[in-house]
Image (cartoon, helix red, strand yellow):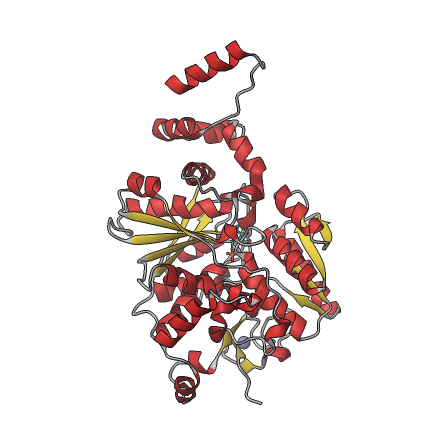
Length: 464
Ligand SMILES: Cc1ncc(COP(=O)(O)O)c(C=O)c1O
Ligand SMILES: [Zn+2]
């Protein structure tokens, strides 16, 4: 039987068949991660001829993907599997577990665009997925592979969103799931999800990087399928928002796509999606993909900006600290893939402070959209790219909002009550920034429940 895909090591280029992947998804020869390859995605080999014969042409694909929108079949209604022609990783479509993920909105952010002097800023809101984050697009893909390969248990280490997604998809598929999360370091909304969906939730007295170490031990010891983003099938699902975004833009390619950077898989998944769309002739060029990290969780930023360049160097892990808990990751597994995404697309890596993240989050909220703190780094980063001319007035920039605002409502409440920043952080604000925060903060007003008090208090507010 001809295999639909293979896994290729991103370090030494060794190819293996999917079911032969080691349990930790690291190449036994060089310890690098794998990527999924298809006959048509291998450039410069004799297999290209096979590809041309076996794959519909670009306009046929566009038409087919649109047609599937009107279908009642679950796999057609999924915003991931609708594009299944470009991710043939599951042989039997009946084995697919879908919550109708994807199909997320693309919003304009007119206030942010105006403030930045840009014609338009767009937000692809991946927080509008079934469990509230972009992880669903990857989870439907990798979980479906786990089902097809006969696994009964799945596991992940998580800063909260992966575990929420994995728990939900495992429950739908009738699989058991084990979650390792750092105790006290994830948002309550996310913790509640993994319990709600019935995962075995283990809070470890360590950070995310410590959880990763232990989940690797677990999958080496038992036949448990690892669903962290080192699993290359996750990235096949996570590349599909690139297709959906292009479709929403009527196949006009934006100049910039800006994503948050944590474990650094998502930006590379999007880059893979755009690269494949380009290779198949769906688009004439690819957007620049930029990655934004929190300043105290910035190993990629530090790596990219080291004196003497990046060639032959290894990323140095850091101890990560940020209130954007989803990206509090010091030893990112997919850093090499992210470097490749930056270099092949021509994008940049930036870092932003806690105050910049909070301001950007409040601004996205004030557009009536909202997102979780980690997602807001994208707008904070865009401001830097605009300030030094890397993003120009007429460029179209798309922010990838990775998580829903309700994921971390504690953060939002603390911000609006002016309880988020330390005194030192407040003191570091410029008068202009302090005024912006004051303008955006909308703390609840507590009043006695009588007519005079309510009307006079509101009258004062309406005049303000
Ligand atoms: C909301 C949110 N944004 C961004 C990220 C970072 O994505 P990646 O780990 O693929 O860099 C995560 C990952 O945990 C997340 O949950
Ligand atoms: Zn290798």
